[in-house]
Image (cartoon, rainbow over all chains, first blue to last red; front, side, top):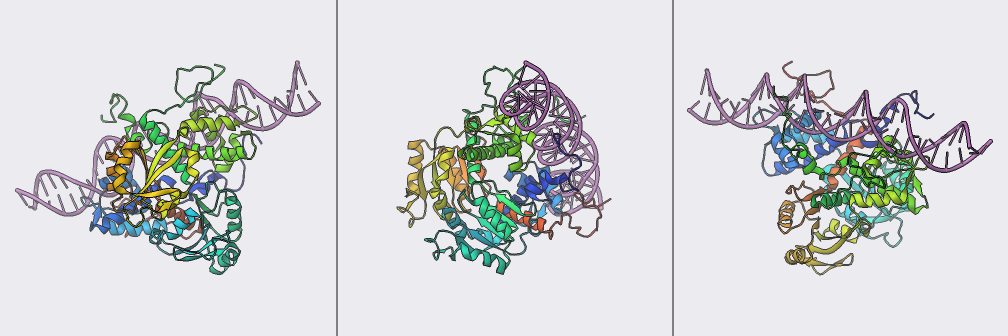
Length: 255
Length: 255
DNA sequence: GAGCAGTCGTGATATTTTTCACGACACATT
DNA sequence: AATGTGTCGTGAAAAATATCACGACTGCTC
């Protein structure tokens, strides 16, 4: 079984590569990100009294091509009017539906450290349909404390809470060690979506949605950008011992 | 005909489309994300006593193809050994350099609300070369308070702090309104990299690196995934008035 | 009402990213 | 020492993604 199995499982394996593991099935990830961005901008413009929004405006703001915006809108099922643009009301309604922000989702928050507290206190998630129903922590010293209007509960009560309220979304703001374990446990209890802030890449079954937020990763990216722009970083090729002239990709050693 | 200009500008304009605006110039964004992921996994494996790490292992863990991992490694200038894998020490050293985590970077934190406090308290950034040198806030009631070992300073002192310490990186954890304004101000003062947590998409000059973290956006994505996996969301096409049978992309109206 | 200017819609095209297939090399075992 | 197995390295093909160019339609102005 060296060269991969061509036969393989029924059909799940075909799109198993990244569709199921990474975003879902609906839309590719970059598209989704842009869609959420449009939603945000449309909301902001709407609040300023605007009635419609043009593809060029969105494109300029985000820094992409206007055509791409139009393609995205088409993919989301949003129709614009020439000379006017896209009706903000329609954009919001449509993206509400596409992004699934229409109905409320109860979530539990696991871990009430610094980051967990920030999340618990952050009120902005309500607009996106997320409501934190309860906050849990293993640390006995934190239990009973009130954070963002929620009383921190002991983890022992988590199990029954999930079962009673049929919780399907969990926010994981626990330390790195034990995060995977906790995630596994949550999945076994029936949680179907995990928003992971622990600095590890969680592995979950295919039927569970996970988003690894991973601030450290974002930081690494920012610093990379920063360094490159400053000019004192590029180092694509190290040239370990054989000096190459081509900065292409790798370096064939044996020539 | 006008199938694009074969001659074209020198070369800078060619990759101007998104290279300069989006990530930088070094590596495409998805590659960078994976690289940071490798770094994280390698660190974790190294702490567990592992000495080398295989492309297949990384691929399986992240959910991508092993070839892609090898290509990425090659792009980063990391050489593996057949039958063994990639030496963790080399991976870490190389990615340290590529991601620019080698030397310390002093940063200031603007905004000490819930999220700002969490960031100030979060110790994990040190590993990635970031050191929070000072914390600022406009709110007079927060000034003087100690958060994560830093005394919150008034924004009035921010200007001179940036100038004196030659601060080039700012973490922006202010509310949405005024975030762009603050960012503009920071850029004028010489800041070259902004890690933005405000729920807006910041616009900065080309020579400034910005990463919009935007938790709400991540949440929207998670919820989308969740809904799609649950099966009660798909709606690619709305069929406003003309019912189409093709769920392709758009719907040609005039036929 | 006709012309003009601005914007959407989309097929074709270019570019980027990922996968496939296979060769080369290193370590383990006999 | 020779063989065997597992892993890297990489050119070529495929797939996905973004861009271009142009047509169609709308609202405004004269």
